[in-house]
Length: 152
Image (cartoon, rainbow, N blue to C red):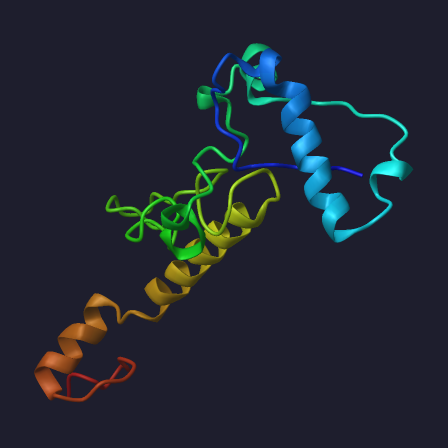
């Protein structure tokens, strides 16, 4: 079983080596409280703390979710409400990755959501009238495709 604690702080008072066992015990106690007998079924424990992540992977802030998992960093607020739709103020530049909506980690959901935004914008551009169609609408007051006799 994989038990993740994405809300664990990057730094622990006294360092992660000093609090590792106590942190694991608290996490396992939380599961045991909801699933009696869980702890007795454990055959081994491998712990990877934010301190380990920083040392071995050089993750900034030692956070696999890139940004804290806090109420202001979840779902449509991730990484900010303005950027949660994966679009940026720079046209055709989209945001994806562990720090993007809807959540962090490496699940692939932010990439899928960003790709959907790209496709949606591409479809929107394809529906925009061309310059001749816009000129035709201005001249005639009627929208629609420009035909060979449109100017007649």
